[in-house]
Length: 184
Ligand SMILES: Cc1cc2nc3c(=O)[nH]c(=O)nc-3n(C[C@H](O)[C@H](O)[C@H](O)COP(=O)(O)OP(=O)(O)OC[C@H]3O[C@@H](n4cnc5c(N)ncnc54)[C@H](O)[C@@H]3O)c2cc1C
Image (cartoon, rainbow, N blue to C red; front, side, top):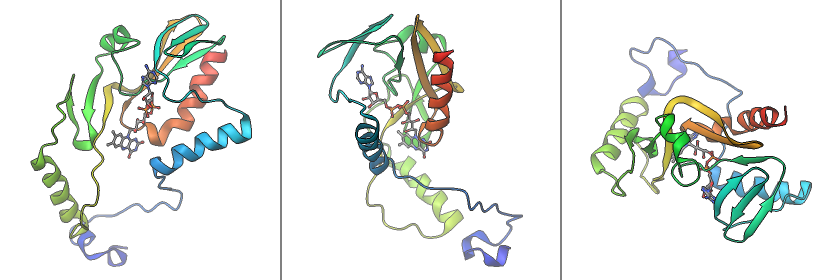
């Protein structure tokens, strides 16, 4: 097995796991295509560029008026302060700056170059010379003691938050659980 690996992965390596079941999905193409699929196939109406300002039982107040529904799911991503600050505070959720794993309640907008250098050095140590960097994805995600959690905000209003930077991989499973939880 080690002989079948590229040179940087040989050496003192005890073993490796190769899975034929893994898929790599590019969020920036997958998410618009998912939205288009839901609109075309299932008639889902998206209210793009519409800020939710408040929620209560049976109603979401937005910048474009009220939306009424018997069940509501709030999934605000990194915006942990606007609509349910007390829940996030109770659960000790902070924000992580992209995958540097730097935590802060209000991260600075400045990306430290030494951290990017460390990531590329690690790449070199494991996989060999890195290809040229063409883009950097700088973003934040919530981080807390649990991988993800559901919270009750009002009757029929459920908060869903991924607090481990794994929401792109776990979204479909988590969505199924969140809906099952809300419908029971
Ligand atoms: C740099 C980076 C790398 C990552 N890499 C990975 C990875 O390799 N694998 C992985 O599984 N996960 C990864 N993640 C984490 C993943 O992106 C998140 O866990 C996932 O996007 C969470 O999904 P979500 O729908 O809960 O929140 P989001 O994707 O953040 O979506 C929340 C949406 O709600 C909107 N919103 C918030 N508040 C309001 C409001 N008041 N009114 C209206 N709209 C509002 C926001 O604008 C946003 O569009 C990464 C994250 C970052 C930043």
